[in-house]
Image (cartoon, rainbow, N blue to C red; front, side):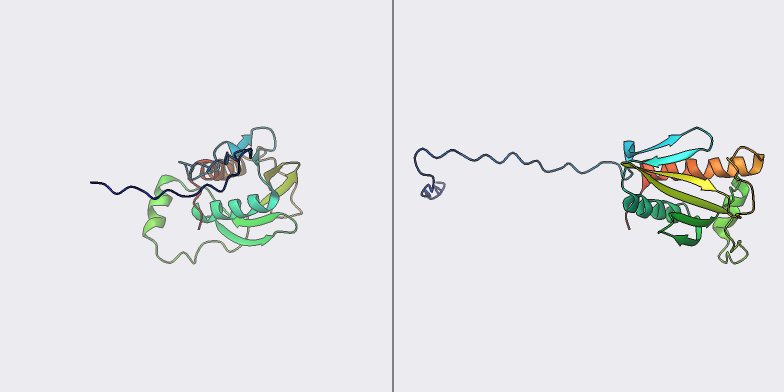
Length: 167
């Protein structure tokens, strides 16, 4: 025989309305990235847009740079600038870098600057020249800088959209 649960007295008075909890527990996201909260603007200059506040976007971009093993040389959060050393590697260079334990020969000078700018509900990320004396390159003037700039933004886009992992 099964035990019967005790009968509990009702605290509800006659004529009182019943309160129903309609709150929803948010479902856990199946993907680890931001999904539709990040997109690319393929204009000139190319921009990466995150539909979040500046502070959240700053943190997310920092995580994406670390996950992509892009060296952050310096940053100025009040100006919205990340100074990074980035050069797109070919397949052979990627394979060789896996076996190198000592990466000290890498450049310690920033060759790329990522600029974050809050515009309304979104934060736009673009690439600006590392040297203020250089003319502003839209990423399309020189073939090398074009592929590097586009490669950097597309790589960050993929990480932010699909693979961003919290620390």
